[in-house]
Length: 195
Image (cartoon, rainbow, N blue to C red; front, side, top):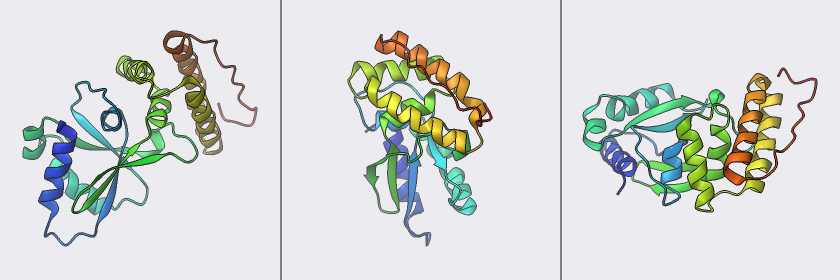
């Protein structure tokens, strides 16, 4: 069992008998990849998406049990962290895949192609390595990556976050050249986008 699954199972156990309704955690980032492929690398955090409807009180309780510096996080070697929905570069309708059905928690993980798209906004070295490993294993394809990226362009542009798109396009083109070894996709942003 990988450290993220161990953390989530122990967190689920700790929540039993606390009178909580069943809820769903949506996992993004590299930990979502580890759940859906043979790819694993070191990480210290398990990023859950902080959707606008996720209750603040529940988020605080989960972080108190499994967040950075907690006993549970230290035992498992990984901690739970929430990331804001607004900072992620996501397609219009992100694809969530079921991963774990626990006693209190249903865990969904972001589809690998959508994870790769989300990494294109910043493309740090670990992000590039993640995408390389997914492509090498055949988990993502160039065609699917471009299709989902174009959906994210539409979502971000209509959502008033077009300013992040020029860099994301440059990063997509880098991935196309260096990882997939294909010609760059020309993407023109409409004038109305606040790019």
